[in-house]
Length: 480
Ligand SMILES: [Zn+2]
Image 1 (cartoon, rainbow, N blue to C red):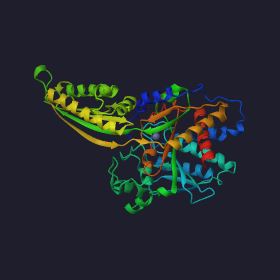
Image 2: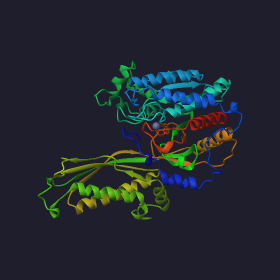
Image 3: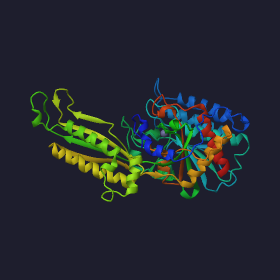
Image 4: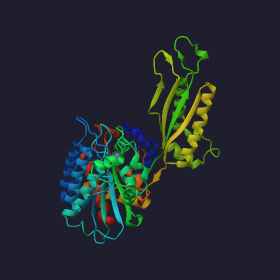
């Protein structure tokens, strides 16, 4: 899911990924240097040089001076959308902008009424963002389609292909995730039109400012008919360190973690830091600290806290051990003065795992142990569930087709034959999560330097941009 906060690479579920990866056999690592193959077949001018130049160009379009920031329908977002629309037309696609500011480009192929493949990612960014998050998925899709277009093979596909640049995934402006893709999937409630940004402007007003007069009825019309869609594919930077560690440019995604956000409030007895004896304190800060350490221990070693059969089946314990990540990212105290024992401490808990049943078991165990700490320390506690999203499992057939396409890309570039590539779980949310309500989804991750994302230091090698475009090209050529 999206927060306007920097997203550390710990979102990627390292242990599961390493486990998945180690269970595969990879013949060697490689970095896509010149293979000596005939470069005509791998289109470096379009898939690498032009794609990288476009990523750089898009990365310059910002609402802020000196750093990258593009939020929902801001002037930079509109400008970026227009640029993307031009690139869609350059790739031979018919384009339009829908009532939520999503940019669409489509080619019908030989049979306009066949179910369409949708390829997408988001054009909005976080604050002080990198240039690859979201944009890479749009640009590599357009690069692949452009190759087909210049070769005269675009209009002969057996089903329609549509690229969508989603207007809002990060949720920075309205603190609401996936506005663009949720509308296309038909899961955006009509009430979303009334949510407000920091300045108190409603989503409906922002759309009006952009000459989009939207009613609740229009919103419902944005939903795609599931019968008209074959599947959804998204290429995205990994935002974690595993592919780099593995020495592999691409990885298949088996699913996107489910998530719960909690808010914990601890109330104690506010007092003078110099006069209240230690034995007579009801200090919510010390209680919060103990709860946070408990959270870390539980999430590192769930098997020590959840009993087999008691709370969990062994398979759930196994998947929790491999995929559970928990974070306290925000904490505030009242009155927050160095010479005052706080009266109240509030902190958030972000908890993610691929196993939804396991997530419930963890929350149950965590809550009951937190309340025990509060009782023992004579402070009062409330734990509120602020947000829940179930895990999304990628379609196994689509995933294996994407894997084959990744192998084909490697083979074309390097002449090397591989039979396995890393299988990763995504700890971060993506548009694919919303679109999974509409159709089957598959994702490919692309290696990024140091696993760093949501930062200007975010970086993808030119050769890996190339690999992602070539994999999408191979996918379309073989499946469509
Ligand atoms: Zn993203």
